[in-house]
Image (tube, rainbow, N blue to C red; front, side, top):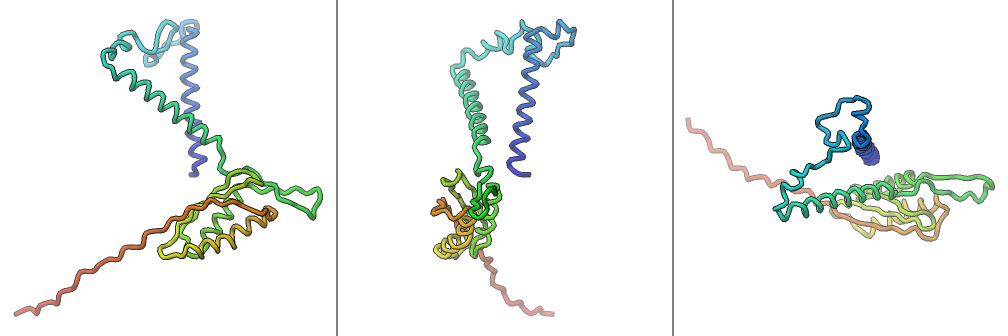
Length: 213
């Protein structure tokens, strides 16, 4: 299951919970349980317009503790900040939806390439380079301000200069040609080197002593 699918499911679940809670609050505020002769749920505190979420006894229970309300306000502010950050992360797309490809020899023809397809091509090309154990590629912006962000995990002992030259001559050159050969395709590259495998040290074997019969 992809991250986008998980995000959609979580957003749908949160939205459904908030919708149900809003409908229950609205029904209690308008006294719909009484007017429509509905059974008031005992577990829901706002079943009528005269009931409050927190009673006076509940509000005054921790009044003598100086740390209680600052902690409550801080936790609520943290939850609100996390929810806002999550929402902004969903609105910010890591790659453009579509890229317009130049067609100088075909007037009236419009070609478009999905940004995710370009990322997949670059990622597959980078992962196939010698000495690259794993590759992760993203794109941001739109031409002519398109940027490529890549993370490469190199195998132990791989020459970094040779890997950079192969990346420039292979996947990046192909991407420039696909986009119509822009003069520059900025690349933010992060390299990591995998730890060498640990060698197992075998204990010396002791010669067996002859059995005495």
